[in-house]
Image: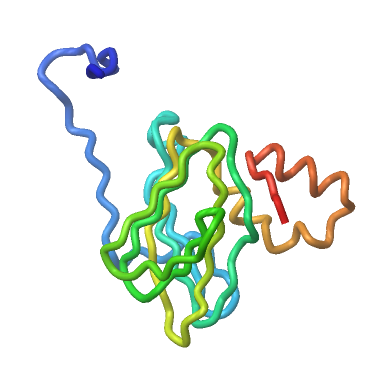
Length: 160
């Protein structure tokens, strides 16, 4: 395997780093003390990846078993315990644990603990996941056809 073709071909570099302090408010608040921080979106990385910090409140469920056709999803546990399903068994992932799910890989996650948990979610290549996160809470109220279109649009295929 070799390095990809150069993206930056100008002179001696440029000032372009993006700084996001830890004190930055989350982009999305969810029920039961949860939140999501949009650290690097597909738009900001020109489609290279998407990186999100997801904070899960105590005892908060997560998505049922699903897979993605176009993106891989990786989990890095920052704090607490996140139960991650690999299509065969549930694993309690704790601080410092990493799980990578390639395209087509069955997976699910949830926080069954009585304490909050926090993790980084990495999607590669980048995809516009923000709309998915923001509308997920209301999708259950939509007509079946509209709900199905939403999930296909966001490369999410349920198996349960």
